[in-house]
Length: 260
Image (cartoon, rainbow, N blue to C red; front, side, top):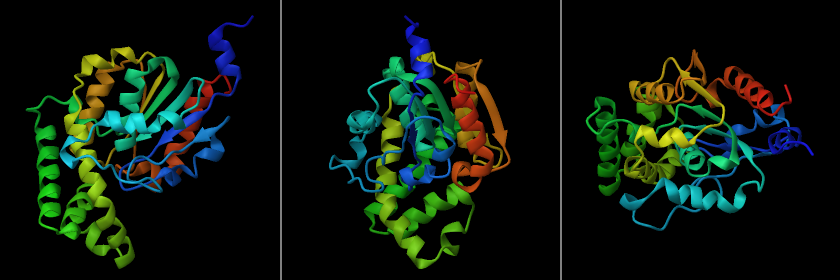
Protein backbone atom coordinates (compact mmCIF):
# COMPACT_ATOMS: atom_id res chain seq x y z
CA UNK A 1 0.00 0.00 0.00
CA UNK A 2 1.29 3.46 -0.89
CA UNK A 3 1.94 5.93 1.92
CA UNK A 4 -0.96 8.34 2.53
CA UNK A 5 1.01 11.38 1.34
CA UNK A 6 1.96 9.68 -1.91
CA UNK A 7 -1.64 8.69 -2.52
CA UNK A 8 -2.69 12.32 -2.08
CA UNK A 9 -0.03 13.50 -4.49
CA UNK A 10 -0.91 11.10 -7.28
CA UNK A 11 -4.62 11.84 -6.97
CA UNK A 12 -4.10 15.26 -8.61
CA UNK A 13 -5.42 17.03 -5.57
CA UNK A 14 -7.89 19.87 -5.97
CA UNK A 15 -6.97 23.54 -5.57
CA UNK A 16 -9.17 26.05 -3.75
CA UNK A 17 -8.80 29.70 -4.82
CA UNK A 18 -9.99 32.55 -2.59
CA UNK A 19 -10.45 35.99 -4.12
CA UNK A 20 -9.84 39.51 -2.84
CA UNK A 21 -12.35 42.02 -1.51
CA UNK A 22 -14.47 43.75 -4.17
CA UNK A 23 -14.03 40.71 -6.42
CA UNK A 24 -15.39 37.17 -6.87
CA UNK A 25 -14.24 33.70 -7.76
CA UNK A 26 -14.22 34.80 -11.40
CA UNK A 27 -10.92 36.58 -10.80
CA UNK A 28 -9.15 33.21 -11.08
CA UNK A 29 -10.43 32.32 -14.56
CA UNK A 30 -6.99 32.76 -16.17
CA UNK A 31 -5.26 30.62 -13.55
CA UNK A 32 -7.64 27.67 -13.44
CA UNK A 33 -6.71 26.20 -16.87
CA UNK A 34 -3.06 26.05 -15.74
CA UNK A 35 -3.83 23.87 -12.74
CA UNK A 36 -3.80 20.09 -12.76
CA UNK A 37 -6.74 18.51 -11.03
CA UNK A 38 -10.00 20.11 -10.01
CA UNK A 39 -10.01 23.79 -9.09
CA UNK A 40 -12.66 25.54 -7.05
CA UNK A 41 -13.07 29.33 -6.83
CA UNK A 42 -15.94 29.97 -4.42
CA UNK A 43 -17.38 33.42 -3.79
CA UNK A 44 -16.78 34.77 -0.30
CA UNK A 45 -19.66 36.22 1.69
CA UNK A 46 -21.15 39.30 0.08
CA UNK A 47 -19.39 38.85 -3.26
CA UNK A 48 -20.39 37.32 -6.57
CA UNK A 49 -23.60 35.39 -6.01
CA UNK A 50 -23.31 35.28 -2.20
CA UNK A 51 -25.42 37.44 0.07
CA UNK A 52 -23.86 39.84 2.54
CA UNK A 53 -23.71 38.76 6.19
CA UNK A 54 -26.72 39.64 8.33
CA UNK A 55 -24.74 40.07 11.55
CA UNK A 56 -23.73 43.56 12.75
CA UNK A 57 -20.82 44.92 10.70
CA UNK A 58 -18.54 45.51 13.68
CA UNK A 59 -18.94 41.90 14.84
CA UNK A 60 -17.83 40.21 11.62
CA UNK A 61 -15.19 37.48 11.96
CA UNK A 62 -12.88 35.59 9.61
CA UNK A 63 -14.27 32.44 11.19
CA UNK A 64 -17.64 33.28 9.59
CA UNK A 65 -15.95 33.24 6.17
CA UNK A 66 -14.35 29.86 6.86
CA UNK A 67 -17.62 28.43 8.16
CA UNK A 68 -19.36 29.67 5.00
CA UNK A 69 -16.83 27.77 2.89
CA UNK A 70 -17.15 24.50 4.82
CA UNK A 71 -19.61 22.73 2.52
CA UNK A 72 -17.83 23.99 -0.62
CA UNK A 73 -14.42 22.48 0.13
CA UNK A 74 -13.11 19.13 -1.15
CA UNK A 75 -13.35 16.18 1.21
CA UNK A 76 -9.72 15.27 0.55
CA UNK A 77 -6.70 17.45 1.33
CA UNK A 78 -6.21 20.28 -1.18
CA UNK A 79 -3.94 23.11 -2.25
CA UNK A 80 -5.03 26.55 -1.07
CA UNK A 81 -4.45 29.89 -2.83
CA UNK A 82 -5.54 33.29 -1.58
CA UNK A 83 -5.24 36.94 -2.57
CA UNK A 84 -5.65 39.90 -0.18
CA UNK A 85 -8.77 39.30 1.96
CA UNK A 86 -9.02 35.83 0.46
CA UNK A 87 -5.43 35.19 1.53
CA UNK A 88 -6.19 36.32 5.09
CA UNK A 89 -9.14 33.92 5.05
CA UNK A 90 -6.82 31.22 3.71
CA UNK A 91 -4.47 31.75 6.65
CA UNK A 92 -7.38 31.28 9.04
CA UNK A 93 -8.41 28.10 7.24
CA UNK A 94 -4.87 26.71 7.05
CA UNK A 95 -4.03 27.29 10.71
CA UNK A 96 -7.31 25.89 12.02
CA UNK A 97 -7.48 22.91 9.64
CA UNK A 98 -3.81 22.24 8.77
CA UNK A 99 -4.46 18.58 8.03
CA UNK A 100 -6.53 19.62 5.01
CA UNK A 101 -3.90 21.79 3.31
CA UNK A 102 -1.25 20.34 0.97
CA UNK A 103 0.28 23.71 0.08
CA UNK A 104 -0.50 27.35 0.80
CA UNK A 105 -0.03 30.20 -1.69
CA UNK A 106 -0.53 33.75 -0.43
CA UNK A 107 -0.48 36.93 -2.48
CA UNK A 108 -0.31 39.82 -0.02
CA UNK A 109 -2.74 38.66 2.65
CA UNK A 110 -4.24 41.66 4.42
CA UNK A 111 -3.73 39.85 7.73
CA UNK A 112 -3.20 43.05 9.68
CA UNK A 113 -3.98 41.19 12.91
CA UNK A 114 -0.46 39.72 12.65
CA UNK A 115 0.97 43.19 13.28
CA UNK A 116 1.38 44.57 16.79
CA UNK A 117 -1.54 46.87 17.69
CA UNK A 118 0.89 49.80 17.92
CA UNK A 119 2.61 49.03 14.61
CA UNK A 120 2.32 52.14 12.40
CA UNK A 121 1.05 50.11 9.45
CA UNK A 122 -1.71 48.53 11.51
CA UNK A 123 -2.58 52.00 12.75
CA UNK A 124 -2.78 53.19 9.13
CA UNK A 125 -5.30 50.45 8.31
CA UNK A 126 -7.35 51.26 11.38
CA UNK A 127 -7.57 54.86 10.15
CA UNK A 128 -8.65 53.71 6.66
CA UNK A 129 -11.24 51.35 8.15
CA UNK A 130 -12.64 54.09 10.38
CA UNK A 131 -12.81 56.46 7.42
CA UNK A 132 -14.82 53.96 5.37
CA UNK A 133 -17.16 53.34 8.31
CA UNK A 134 -17.62 57.09 8.76
CA UNK A 135 -18.61 57.63 5.14
CA UNK A 136 -20.98 54.66 5.14
CA UNK A 137 -22.65 55.83 8.33
CA UNK A 138 -23.03 59.25 6.69
CA UNK A 139 -24.63 57.55 3.65
CA UNK A 140 -21.78 58.61 1.37
CA UNK A 141 -20.83 55.30 -0.28
CA UNK A 142 -18.97 57.01 -3.15
CA UNK A 143 -16.56 58.65 -0.72
CA UNK A 144 -16.16 55.35 1.13
CA UNK A 145 -15.44 53.50 -2.12
CA UNK A 146 -13.01 56.18 -3.28
CA UNK A 147 -11.08 55.92 0.00
CA UNK A 148 -10.71 52.16 -0.47
CA UNK A 149 -9.99 52.06 -4.21
CA UNK A 150 -7.51 54.94 -4.13
CA UNK A 151 -5.62 53.45 -1.19
CA UNK A 152 -4.83 50.28 -3.10
CA UNK A 153 -4.53 51.71 -6.61
CA UNK A 154 -3.37 55.32 -6.27
CA UNK A 155 -5.03 58.69 -5.74
CA UNK A 156 -7.70 59.55 -8.27
CA UNK A 157 -8.30 55.95 -9.43
CA UNK A 158 -11.96 55.89 -8.38
CA UNK A 159 -12.70 59.24 -10.01
CA UNK A 160 -11.29 57.99 -13.34
CA UNK A 161 -13.60 54.97 -13.42
CA UNK A 162 -16.74 55.00 -15.54
CA UNK A 163 -20.12 55.36 -13.84
CA UNK A 164 -20.93 51.66 -14.06
CA UNK A 165 -17.72 50.65 -12.27
CA UNK A 166 -18.19 53.38 -9.66
CA UNK A 167 -21.70 52.08 -8.98
CA UNK A 168 -20.42 48.52 -8.56
CA UNK A 169 -17.77 49.65 -6.09
CA UNK A 170 -20.29 51.79 -4.19
CA UNK A 171 -22.40 48.65 -3.76
CA UNK A 172 -19.41 46.47 -2.83
CA UNK A 173 -17.91 48.86 -0.29
CA UNK A 174 -20.49 47.80 2.30
CA UNK A 175 -19.01 44.29 2.44
CA UNK A 176 -15.50 45.76 2.46
CA UNK A 177 -16.36 47.39 5.79
CA UNK A 178 -17.28 43.92 7.08
CA UNK A 179 -13.95 42.61 5.78
CA UNK A 180 -11.95 45.23 7.67
CA UNK A 181 -13.86 44.43 10.85
CA UNK A 182 -13.10 40.73 10.45
CA UNK A 183 -9.39 41.39 9.89
CA UNK A 184 -9.06 43.66 12.90
CA UNK A 185 -11.20 41.38 15.11
CA UNK A 186 -9.03 38.34 14.42
CA UNK A 187 -7.07 37.26 17.50
CA UNK A 188 -4.01 35.58 16.01
CA UNK A 189 -0.48 36.48 17.08
CA UNK A 190 2.19 35.29 14.63
CA UNK A 191 3.14 32.35 16.86
CA UNK A 192 -0.27 30.80 16.14
CA UNK A 193 0.81 30.17 12.56
CA UNK A 194 3.08 27.38 13.79
CA UNK A 195 0.30 24.89 13.07
CA UNK A 196 0.83 25.50 9.33
CA UNK A 197 3.44 22.94 8.27
CA UNK A 198 2.75 22.61 4.55
CA UNK A 199 4.90 24.20 1.79
CA UNK A 200 4.23 27.94 1.50
CA UNK A 201 4.56 30.34 -1.44
CA UNK A 202 4.64 34.07 -0.62
CA UNK A 203 4.03 36.58 -3.40
CA UNK A 204 3.96 40.37 -3.24
CA UNK A 205 4.00 43.38 -5.52
CA UNK A 206 6.90 45.80 -5.33
CA UNK A 207 4.49 48.70 -5.92
CA UNK A 208 2.06 47.78 -3.13
CA UNK A 209 1.35 49.86 -0.01
CA UNK A 210 3.65 49.60 3.00
CA UNK A 211 0.88 47.96 5.02
CA UNK A 212 0.98 44.78 2.95
CA UNK A 213 4.78 44.68 2.95
CA UNK A 214 4.73 44.83 6.76
CA UNK A 215 2.49 41.75 6.86
CA UNK A 216 4.71 39.96 4.35
CA UNK A 217 7.78 40.55 6.52
CA UNK A 218 5.99 38.86 9.44
CA UNK A 219 5.08 35.90 7.22
CA UNK A 220 8.65 35.55 6.00
CA UNK A 221 9.79 35.39 9.61
CA UNK A 222 7.20 32.77 10.45
CA UNK A 223 7.88 30.71 7.30
CA UNK A 224 11.64 31.03 6.72
CA UNK A 225 11.61 28.11 4.28
CA UNK A 226 8.84 29.58 2.14
CA UNK A 227 9.39 30.32 -1.52
CA UNK A 228 9.14 34.09 -1.98
CA UNK A 229 8.85 36.38 -4.99
CA UNK A 230 8.53 40.18 -5.21
CA UNK A 231 6.98 41.07 -8.57
CA UNK A 232 6.86 44.36 -10.54
CA UNK A 233 3.18 45.04 -9.83
CA UNK A 234 0.84 46.33 -7.17
CA UNK A 235 -1.58 44.78 -4.70
CA UNK A 236 -3.97 43.68 -7.43
CA UNK A 237 -1.24 41.71 -9.19
CA UNK A 238 -3.23 38.46 -9.54
CA UNK A 239 -5.70 40.43 -11.70
CA UNK A 240 -3.57 43.13 -13.36
CA UNK A 241 -0.46 41.00 -13.86
CA UNK A 242 -1.78 37.47 -14.05
CA UNK A 243 0.89 36.70 -16.66
CA UNK A 244 3.50 37.12 -13.90
CA UNK A 245 1.59 35.60 -11.01
CA UNK A 246 -0.15 32.57 -12.50
CA UNK A 247 2.92 30.67 -13.79
CA UNK A 248 4.53 30.90 -10.34
CA UNK A 249 1.39 29.67 -8.63
CA UNK A 250 0.72 26.80 -11.03
CA UNK A 251 4.35 25.63 -10.95
CA UNK A 252 4.45 25.72 -7.15
CA UNK A 253 1.27 23.65 -6.88
CA UNK A 254 2.43 21.18 -9.52
CA UNK A 255 5.75 20.73 -7.72
CA UNK A 256 4.02 19.93 -4.45
CA UNK A 257 1.46 17.72 -6.11
CA UNK A 258 4.20 15.57 -7.60
CA UNK A 259 2.96 16.63 -11.01
CA UNK A 260 5.87 18.87 -12.02
